[in-house]
Length: 270
Length: 259
Image 1: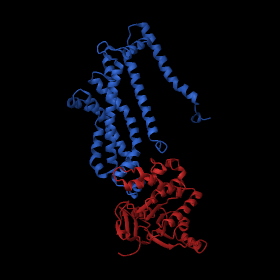
Image 2: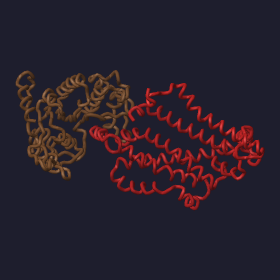
Image 3: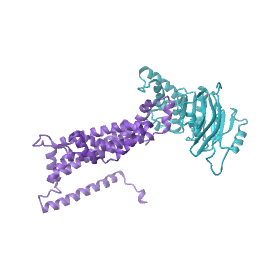
Image 4: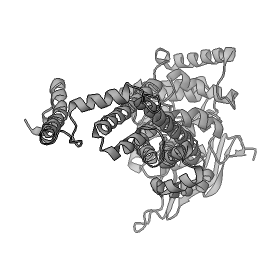
């Protein structure tokens, strides 16, 4: 049988998917052992025990200085910024997208501006945000909004335009005015597409969040990683990176599930 | 302008830059006529349909409906069923029919509540029963076959009681057997509701079987060096007798050789 027609069974698929992960772990442990044997003080590739120790310190014991459990405090701070930022982006993207996609005059006025704004590299204006909004929460949230909203706006506009012309005509023959078409035909149909756009923006949102936290913050997952970098604390950095990856993965999965649950008609006709 | 015709088209021209699509269209459609429009692809029958719908505007000439010039946008007096995408995928079958009634009554919330809603649902259920979709009332259109989706599109339109029903190749994507069922349904609804129907089709025999009058669109002037220089017009306007075994067949043969 040709290679292109051979498919792994479910069990085989799980095994071959696990193999690269297992290989990574084995390679890490081997080199970690080699380095630690040469120099027990080595910090670059910590042993499993140091990881366990660091995780216990960060996730289960209150910090001596602040009395807070650092991992949870960092996670709460970061997720709050992420959710506010992405929430504002979603709201702006939805509103602008529906208006831009539906109303030619609105789009004639605003589409060019959104297009230009979306070309500005968000990190390049981070200093401006710090100068204008200070080093507090606001500038971090604004960076996330600036980094994700233009994409969501343009994506929503595109999705609205993609709705079959027939449906919009049909609604008009059912005596719907512009507002009614927006409320009953356009908005409900782009809702699941908004969820998709937000889900795909989460990666960018994390990027801008960690960038902002790295530069000016007092807590947060990105802040912690960049803080302990000074002490080469790989035993803290790697678990934090794994934790951020897990959070991103869970958020993505949650958005998928929520979309399928809220919009049962969606998905099959994509 | 006291002509009794429901639809009156006078000296209608439609062209796009560099392309003439329709020229010198004159047409009067009386109430309760079932007009089918046939023609080769690219002969402008869909453009004519869009003009009647109000989705596009004529370059020259005017369309009158019930004596009044047509508003430059689609409206509630002309119901429509397209070949595809006529129903709303995010609404169930029942909601698809209900939405028109809700839109008519509730201009801001776009939903009706309480007793009125129950009455409207009852009305929709009667309509769904009439077209044979009541058992699928809670399904989403995606789960319906092509024929059932077109039944739904018809009931969604007809619940609003439009005077004119515009059909754009509504059965073009259906299997022959289902198409025959749909023909029966449309004929029945046409006579029950006293509709005036204008249907585009590319199937000449369908046009003859369904309508009371058949229009053929074709180009009478053709410049071989510039095929887009001249538009199409109505080349045949034939009344169709309901008496099927009598006289129709030769006409079809004559027309087919003509087209």
